[in-house]
Image 1 (cartoon, rainbow, N blue to C red):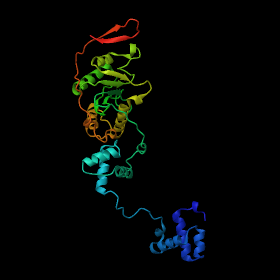
Image 2 (cartoon, rainbow, N blue to C red; image 1 turned 135 degrees about the horizontal axis):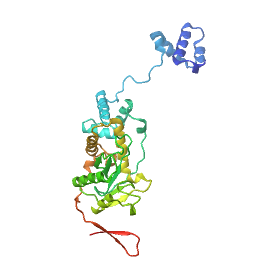
Image 3 (cartoon, helix red, strand yellow; image 1 turned 30 degrees about the vertical axis):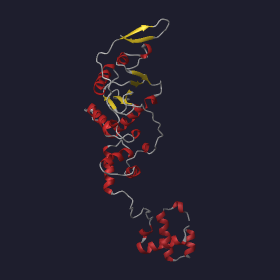
Image 4 (cartoon, rainbow, N blue to C red; image 1 turned 135 degrees about the vertical axis):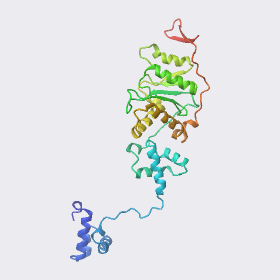
Length: 323
């Protein structure tokens, strides 16, 4: 019997018709169709009770699933995912619990899978090793997001606290010019205090390949505030892993939520508040950054001491000294 060239339904129909006509012994007929006698009797019984449709392939799905999540709870999971389409099961589990819906993470994930709400790239769990500073404001990471999916030539400026992941600033500057960056940092310093150190890449406007030791007016202004500046390694963006991961989350939010063209900064302000006060973070034990961050006690000085550069005898470097 050429089973592979026939549909399963057609195979069964031919079998039960031949069996009903008793054209040959039942055992020989089962051998010809390569099935067991109990299976043959089952098909024949269905045929006699239900007709041709009775021998169609029967679903193996149970008629009742006592452990399946209640439809109303399942709908709450779906609605929460649609509200935050870029959040995974762990984060949604925390938000659902805040509303009194307590479900295991795996249950939330299965619900999302059933409703086709989990993209392929989210079905793999990457191995992550995290490092962080011991206290808030010990180090802020600063970088520009790339222009992908953005309505301006350059993505927003992001300033992130290394310890708490608290988002200090998220600004739609539209360019890497130093003056708008300085204005954003001044506002951040007045609101949040001054950090002990800042980490950036070798990019504009805080680094210049044409300046001695890469210093720019912006980086010197930061140094005058008593901030220790650090730069990531060339070609090693993982040095700024936290702000890079944040940009990945921001990119997913842009792709799945959309960006109102006329309210760019308002959208960023709302997203920054959500990131700090609503979104659970796995690296923080599913707490929000706002629960781990507090303002720096170091106050911003709008008129810091000037810097003088004195050449040390016998040394090619210039040593900064506050006057």
